[in-house]
Length: 133
Picture 1: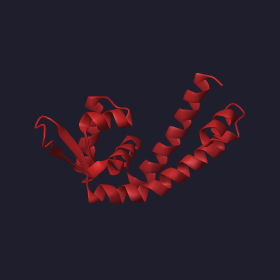
Picture 2: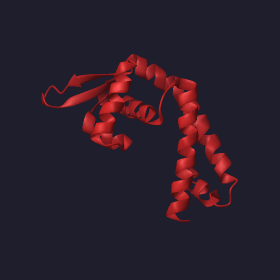
Picture 3: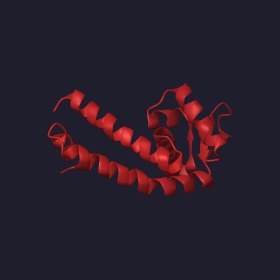
Picture 4: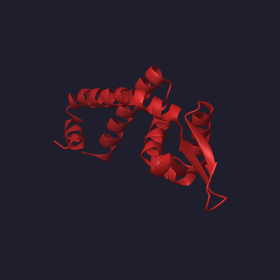
């Protein structure tokens, strides 16, 4: 197994997830991942920097991402009560609903993408490793 094979598998799976979420729910993959992180966070909120780290984006990218989520009513911003300079992103009920609707699509698409990749001998060991088999 090489890093290049892993990167190629990752890109293929991500492309399938992106298509499925966009087509089925109008969500980008980063938006979905941000909603996952926010929903799992205590109080449904995270500092912007924490969210950026959790979804693997830089600060300016997460700012644009959160702006899209806010515009769609899936999150809102809130000031940090103990540090007025800190800004939180908070998942809304609409965000929780959209996340709940999109999760089965994400899971089906992930399973399908990994199954398809598993038929390629180049990726079989990687797929088995990802699945813990």
